[in-house]
Image (cartoon, rainbow, N blue to C red):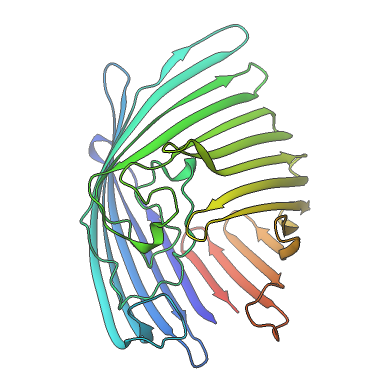
Amino acid sequence: MVLPSLNYNFVGEPGQYGAYWGLNANIQNIVRVDERDSLRFSVSPNWTLPYTSSIGDIYELKLSFQSDLYVVNDVDEDSDSVTGGGDDFDGVAGRFFPEASLKWRYPFVRPGETITQVFQPIAQLVLAPDCCNVGEIPNDDSRAFEWDDTKVFDPDRFSGLDRVDSGSRLNYGFEWTGYLPEGGYADVFLGQSLRFWNDNDELRDGSGIDEDLSDLVGRIAVVPSDWLDMTYRFRLDLDDLDMNRQDLGLSAGPEEFRVDLHYIQLENDVEDSKEEQVSAGVRAKLGEFWTIGTQGTYDIHDSELIAIGSLLEYQDECFGMMLNAAYSPESDDEDSSGDFTAMVQFRFTNLGNIGSNF
């Protein structure tokens, strides 16, 4: 059970030269019966300086300083297992992780009567120590990692806080966008990452960034109107030119009733297997503030349902609430009837987020 999970996010007003401060903070308590427990305190102040030169190229310098404190029980220092069984650790663990990044892009704009084109090369240098993912710190929220176009220029590519994105690297790519006068657009992106040294993080095995030179990732998006969004994402292994990941998505309908369809094909290099999944979901607005939705995911390769879930959301100018519930029939235990999870999240526009998992 996760109770509570508190998030606070702050962005200050721009000061001299347009620079601004930010702060991200989190408190999360995970309690399990006869298994690993953890209480996490995390705070990460950051400073950002944007700059546009006289010739039109755009820079962004960002500094961040993440500090984490954990109070844990029954942590297996040799694995991510929640059941322990190895060199179990009980006590307090902490870390300090500084990171600096400098991003550059140079948009070239070509106006036209039928289409306005924007082409921009993009590069980013990320500097960080090769450290800090130690065995005393449990990994609960950073297990799932997928290298795709959305992660290329993200200084912290993990989804959670339990693992930091250690090591220095150079990210680069390009993006072309064509805008129509009626408001639609098309977009093409290619990107890659070059790591300066190998940090041997087990989470990266088979992920696309397990080598110093990452897989090539890309995106092709066609959005003719607000009612239709078609996106194709891919990850290409340059050693053998195999498609390690493909994601074809379709989103259609007005804001009041939206339908989403996805097909995902993934090569699992760690287990030497191929995964194929399809998912379908709908979201509907009930009045001005309420939204309901449901989604299901099906495994094509194994011919079985992976998960089905639903949500109920309320959002106004100052306050938001979301209830998520999901059921997964998959389980390693033959006697198990599946896993059910639920999460309640409260959002306060000027305060932060409060959430609980059950």
